[in-house]
Image (cartoon, rainbow, N blue to C red; front, side, top):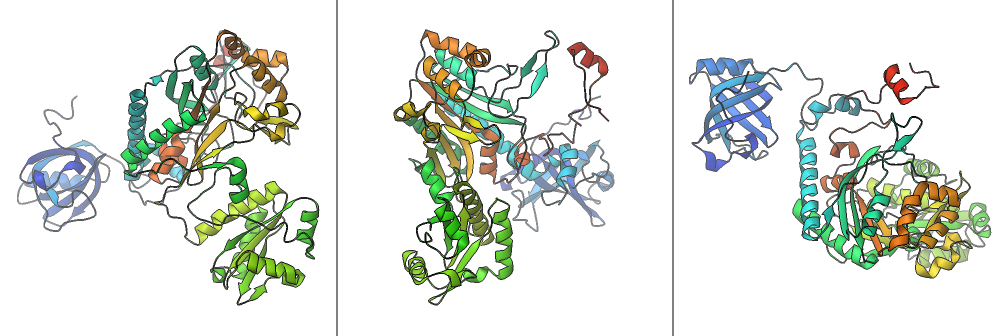
Length: 593
């Protein structure tokens, strides 16, 4: 049965304006709110375009008035009436100058009382929101997020097509490979005992496309990683994947700066200044303790190691003599913001990043006030006050430990202090390219080196002779784009020499047989002419978070997973029928409740 009959929508709710006054309009949507004032019934009707107010007058049409009186929140209805100017205008809504004087109303679908309110500030728990995602997705801010996502994808596709990129799909069912996060495995019914892996990225296939001569490739693609989750991470996520042939780092950065400026202009109407600033990895770590620094505020690190080389304060001296670091951040003129209780909380905060403690020094007038002041000699006092140009009311926070601990703890502290002091402008966008990453990082648990990015990243030419002898000093032809302290995208120039790729695998602890088994099809392609190539991949979900101001990745994905990688709406993952397992040749050795 056609519930609409001959009725057809003429306008969306949120599109009516003053120029529509005296026109007859038919709108359809959900009842956001109803107010019965005796002889008048007001209904706020909502669809994806917004809200419009409709008024039913008992004296105009008693039948329509009575039916309007029946509707409740989230009923789906259609209304026909004349657009007129509102007597009491509402500047907070785009349709606030007009209303529809209702003549006809039809209930298309009734609704029970929803378990969550369909409004932006409903204060529902995330569990309730995800369990009732179909209601949550009706909220204006959620719909706006997904509209921005769709518009951004269109901007990307338009730009890529204009610049001669081909959109090419790569396989979802692939073979498991080492490195990176854990793979999601898919059992094969046809080949019992064998498994596919869902792709963590299309890395190898996009390189093969370059070998195949496709020159410029892109794809907006689903990727999968079985890893611990957090606010900006999901087990299934979306990448904008890009690869180019006959290019170097400068070529890739240049075209991506054009893409980034296009996205920000068309989605946010913001002009990004280019060239975007650059900072090498070592500088980022030394100044901010992070390879994704937030540059919207200051609090750069101050290296205090030399000042405290001969300190009588044992916590400093023991670290300086052991070749460790003593660093601080200076908060200018705001020492009154840090009570003893506030400082105690900051100390607990840095300890959560493995720091053993947090020292602090406050300048009051010309005197240093601190629990460690009695351990400071005149020379140290002079270097602190004069060398750091400290002024009355300044506060210095200090962490002493291994360089990694100091960078992690102090890097987190600078962000916390800036947030606590309301010094972060949420409408400001600071972009930076981080370059010259280490090629390797040491995995303490595995007791071996692993790839900082992935095993196909090319080393910087002048560091090639250190690949076997001193891997910790080898830099990579790698680059990340960081926006407001979040890594939005990252890429590299790729290894295209078979011999160098084999050396890389060996440095990562792979035998020749293992490398051949895992990556033989890539190595084999390198026998037949390989163009120099490189690329970049953007986390599309994170980019949309930046563009919408969201702080939770689940707010920019239609049907996300929870922190435990489950879907509260559908109930996934779940157990399967014993017959399905038997078909796949799988026997469980865990007891499933």
